[in-house]
Length: 494
Image (cartoon, rainbow, N blue to C red):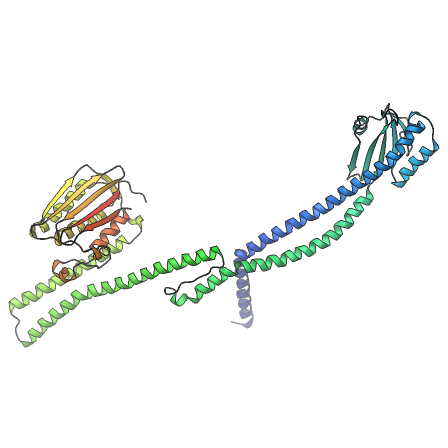
């Protein structure tokens, strides 16, 4: 590989890194805050500029019109006194009208009561009749200002009244150019634009700094999470800067505690599994070593050989039971999509379970009774529910007393069906009741070996019932028996 290849490869890595960083920044909260703050700052600045220019133009036009109207009022009295409006000549009036037009570089038109133009300083429309909306309104006593921005002129109409009778005798129309107003607006716009640029730059700086400041607590959260990465299960984080970061910290701490519990549970589970699987193997190893040692010393008696082999077979069965229960528990831990739901006759299902367990109950001289109040059809996973209910009934048989009983009852309402398993056994002391659904937990460890079981039965039962979105409860008093109640919905909702 030559040097140019290395160079191109390095350039590609740099470009790829830049693209990645740009994409990350484009999706960042910091950029969004910056853009929002920038928009919030720039929009008012532009509105302010528009308002300033509009107000300048409006005020200037209004002042110009007021000034023209005042000067027209001064001439209006002379028009009435001299009779100029009725056709009399007056050099003074003529001079003042011309001066007024020259002052504003505009045009002055006098209209009499017959709507005829008697004077036009431009000399264009004299003796013509004018019928315009502004003139008609003015004859009704309403003067008006008409500003045409596109054509750049201002037209002011002033009513002329008789000094004595106060009757309308004519209208004075003054049209003046407004180029100077447009030029003043342009000059003011340049000044405002300079100020606008300065304000936008200030807003840019403030928005950039504010966005950086606002997202800083989130960076602190990230840094805190990275700092505790090696021992995150043992350390809480606290970020009270914002309500959001405080809530985020609290959510993380809750998650951390849950994970801590899960990790402790996992370690305990692994330890228990290792112990439970190792115990039968250790027993088999001891028995096998004893047989080998006996063989080396001489011939092993048949009775001893049979006894040891029977014990080994029992340990193998025990190991197989543990593995089977572990596999069942693993299947229970899978997602609900693995549940095979179908409509099942619960009465028939429970009767079949009891039929299978009656031989075990008979061996221990335990009476097994079923009470069914109503026919029940529900949507369940028949295999998993059978396993759950079998464990409850079998426990009632195993942990019972001589000539005891196990009563199983079924009932139903509009939403749920109920299974109750009662026994006359040894009962469970109060401290143990909250732990009996934990994996490998045994209430009576001293008798667990002779009774049998793996300590996984109730954990499997609970998982199966929860998989059906149901609930299981235990009520027990030591020495007086135990009652398990199971509630499961008739309709399964994934």
